[in-house]
Length: 193
Ligand code: SAM
Image (cartoon, rainbow, N blue to C red; front, top):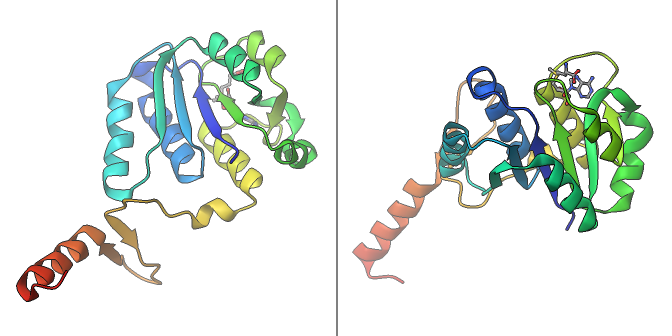
């Protein structure tokens, strides 16, 4: 199976906490398998991810405090490709099929502050989600959505304690853990296995 990791470049703990958490949550919800934070270990972001997983399931691979340049070079050495999201790149419509058809592991690089030339030069693809400046969260979501052709929006995660039942109004949520507890109680009461 093709693996997609997201590398967040240039996270500034004071300014970017919320946005970086959203990058990680979009990575998880839209079908990426890993989230890599360069340079810094930010426990708050890890806590946010793990709290979401605790209730909604899944397990995103997370690594923090990495040297992003080395990570990019090692990723390529292992046969993966690097996709850097930037408004200066090639339009997503012109490259997404080619990227998908390669069937290779993908490291998606998104920036916060100005991204240095290294990433433009070492990326196998510099990809623009349109050629206007917007947001790393939007760029990542659209890249993953185009990559998976919308199928990721039907993802469900193992070990979820909560599952949403789509509802035209209000909130309908099944608490899986409670259901399981009830089953256990009933089994104990009836002696059934
Ligand atoms: N000013 C920064 C620069 O010149 O590199 C970009 C800052 S932007 C808020 C943060 C990140 O969002 C970028 O590094 C890029 O990954 C992503 N991004 C923003 N607009 C984009 C677009 N149109 N296409 C692809 N990625 C985009």
